Image 1 (cartoon, rainbow, N blue to C red):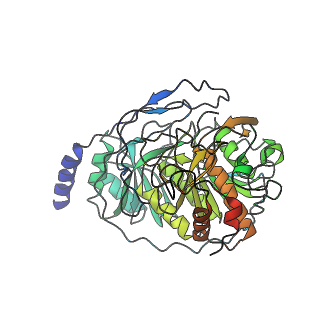
Image 2: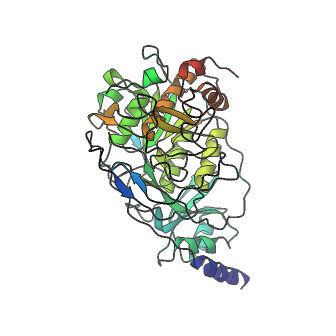
Image 3: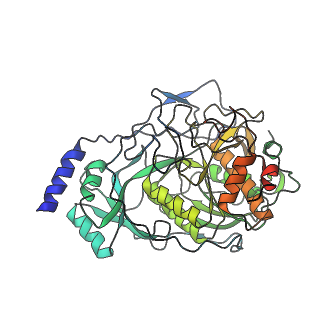
Amino acid sequence: MAVEAVIRFAAILAGAMTIAAVPASAQSNDATPDRTKIDCSTEANAIAADCIRGGGDKGGSGAAQAGAVFLPALIVDLFPNPVALPAPVPTPRPEPATAPAANQAGPPSGGPIISPTDLIAVQSRRAVTGDFVPDEVLVTVDGDAGAMQQIAASFGLEVRSQRQSRLLGTTLVRFGIPDGRPVGVVLAQLAADGRTQRREPNHIYSLQQAAGIVNYAFDRIALDAKQASGENVRIAVIDTGIDDTNPALAGVIAAQFDAMPNVPIEKRDHGTSIDGLIAGVGPLEGMAPGAKIYHARAFEGGKSTMDVILSALDWAADQNVSIINMSFVGPKNDLLGTACRNARALGMVLVAAAGNNGPKAPYGYPAAFDGVIAVTATDASDGLMPQANRGAYVFISAPGVEMVAPSGAGSDVVTGTSFAAAIVSGAIANLIHATPDRSANDIEKALAATARDLGPKGRDNDFGYGLLDLKAAEAVRE
């Protein structure tokens, strides 16, 4: 009876919470957009996302300013200031596994695409819009399959998938809400059950591509193209599907993983560009030729959900990669934060796009988590991309405006913090190739200490520490 009272009380409290979702704007890859035409886009508040910084996040107030944010047509996501959920009771986390071996050789190129083997799918994933999936929640559960079914029965839910997460160190369950209750109400109800450890919406994340001649990045970050090498450095990329027949990716892809096998692949441009900028070969050579890409497909139509991304991150961690590139942005999610923290504890360098949603946009995650290198985009004259997110979490700047990159079966001109993140991932691969025992902390400190200041003196909200200077970073040691 006490539990029922708690549930009813929680439901009444949470019932006042409003959860709204609106469609995301379309994404295309037009190489010659009309730059005078700007889309105005607003999004509903994302529940449980904390856009005002505090606690363990990187410094700054981070409060988003009110008003419309004007976005180029190809920028697809915005997560304004959300309403925060009641904080769950902290649960001790298991110690992370042993750190991965550095630069371990991967399986042969062109291997089969792997799909999740431990996912129990009751209901297929579907196309999503808005800030989170409106009839699902993600919960970490202390207990076996029987406990999960009991929880589902007690709260009128259905188990849509369950799997053991390496980076979360526990079982992640995707519960469906078949009766239309708001996500906030269900999360509040589940908080009354001690077997549930963490409870989050199944947030939606968006790739960070803006409108799209040569790749000027080598010169701007002080990397000699003739000496660039990421030979045998293992890099995970979480993105769209790719066109692995593109000549720029010949011999580059060590393994592929499909985190959403029930969703047909329609878009391959973004992921192809990211992989090519990092480690492409031939005329469109990337920053780190010779690096091995472990590519996880987790996006379609520019969108993904938290459970899909976590599945891709777990797979990446199992490949013993040195770097994880995350060229996407979404709201703050405690599960993603835990996964990033544990990946960093395993010795991986995490690189993420800061976001393309403008100076008034809220902080973008995963870039804004501690231990993640948040990258903003600059142009050939070292000017800041106008649509870039701003904030104290921005760590470093790199070229990301109007660069030629592999795309689909050919090439295209691309712009966005997504591509700046890829430049930084490739640059870091050069550092690891030169000094394999260099730690993630050492790399982060070296980048900060040697970046070329572009804005006000010292670290600022626009450029972070400044423009990446790889030559200087290579000379720095702990």
